[in-house]
Image (tube, rainbow, N blue to C red):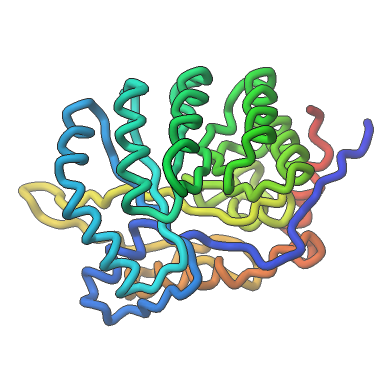
Length: 304
């Protein structure tokens, strides 16, 4: 089988913060470390129907104040957002309204390819680029079929977004898509990021706990990664709050996730973020960890 060559990461990469870090700051009253100078923040908004989009846009003054306060208090270098539409397919006009909203409040405008509606995506992308001084990035699902993915990649190469973000999918199932994104984005010199990441690779028992974002950066060349954000389930039976007895802790020595007793959830979650942000992500460094090396060799051998 022909060996596949990858363009992995050799430079410092990003761990992108999300709503979790914002919540930790608010709940702790700012006692948890809050200086994110130069770091990036992705805020996720759940909009599952047209009414929720309308309400979201009606509340834009409050949202603008929120973003301004986050920039001031937490000192993020870049703040952008993505929308979780679930099964809802917003019209082109609604997407354009969300583009206009982003242009006013965020450092760049994100245009999402929704439900494989590539023609709609191109219309909205063109609209976004026509907005005065707008920096436009794209957000695409890595699970696209190879023919459609190739069309999307060719379009992005032509349009040159400021960056492109990709929804994380399992490495072994979508290896062809990862290889294609790596090859095309590197050649076009477009920054590409992986978002909505789970924690563990879970490909085989030997490498089950290896961190997804570290592999994405070191082996597939993603400039940055953002973990999935899921709003906490705050109530148990009879309205009682439930607290996890254990939590995942990232081990920067092994690049793996471990289960620890939950002694201080907010501090541990922040420590995880800081450790992930500081990881050396060159392929040479990653391969010093035996389980990571095992996983990279396994991925290397997968056929397209």
